[in-house]
Figure: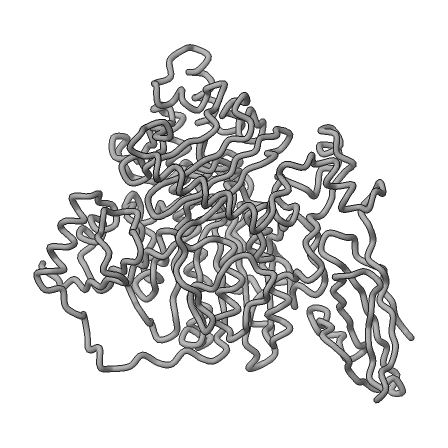
Length: 618
């Protein structure tokens, strides 16, 4: 059945082809699923079709004269964050399985297909999300800085450490709290530093906007762990916390055993023929690999159900029309030559943003969006002027900046292996700078080698049976520079850096990378042990933040201070705060009645330091 297609352009620039969406194109309106898939997945020929449709009379779908409901001055902000996932859902052109909940979110929201992580792995990515600062600038670039002390000492480090940001840097959730938001995180952290108590009103497996005081705006984050790399092989473990009522059930944390009585997940329920199952050319075409790919899609199916639980709860609470919803993933896919790499397979992610009143419903926006843009963009939506220390930009809201020309990413230590790569990308071309060209592409990481698809690549490598494409990853040297045309070479297999006709583009992205590194600073050139000891002022262990001290100002208000520059102070007043889920954020002098039997407790922590002890009972 024929349907109307609504098309709009954010600029008059020539459309060189999809799916890279050059600046700045928006597709909007209703299409059949087949046409929508075509528009999302086509190449240059489809761009011609799109322009033809536009010229022949694409018209607005609906009455443009009816205004959408106004966005609240301080809207609620909901983040739904999946793990380890490239754009493998129907809303972004992959129709292998149906994801009805994400499709309904996309139908009332805007899809951003040019969204990029700053790294191909979770902890550095989450550092950027939490702070609005690039990991290479704040010491969060090595994977991972906390946990597993023995592993860290085995590679010559003094132990776990926290990335040490500049004193003025705060967690973005704290900034939201300082401006009146109730902030919750359910439940992953992995920020490359211990989060201070000022970060969240509520943190943990039942953290939820439903626990806020009546009428208070919220900033709530839910992390969906089911699509994580580990769930490709650890199929008896995992977490299905997001089921109706999880936020108030104090007796159960839902795991696999609650869903599958045997405690084991069945084989993936993906009814797709082998020849129709999407298989990147860099993976081995074997049954074990296809099983991994099917598991990836099955995990997406479960993740979509979890999204549905949260969307249903928001609607049941009557909050849909006062909430801006973000759904995105923390970096690219979980399979070999995806996660940890700076190819698009490792850093390009899907993102959907839905506004109150379904503003711009169904649009596809070509905007380049970096993970360092999340903090300033959320602040801008909430009417908060982004602080000067942020290294990203607001992409919409009151403080929106002009559209980006480039996004950037970096890779450094991965588990016990050191490498150093920097990347820059515009709407079409990707530039990679390899600082250690004598080191191989492939890093033998035991964690990744638990995956069948990785074992298959290694087996065929050892047997000399890899295809030329599959063998590329196992080259023992790298060129200093690489340049890829992601439009014509989406898997980034053909290096164009030495081709004369691409020298202007190579120089452009080389210069853009230099300017970025100069602007934000790059700690990747400093040996990690030396960086840690500098963070620790030459000592042998992580510094501890100075305890809060209390004094009164000239009009009798209480002032809390720590001798440690950049320390964030949290406090509680007991018994008044006994039922509060978290600590209050200290923002300046305050008054309360010490004569009424109240007790003041306070704790301080600078990001990158250990927490001070609790001071109380002054």
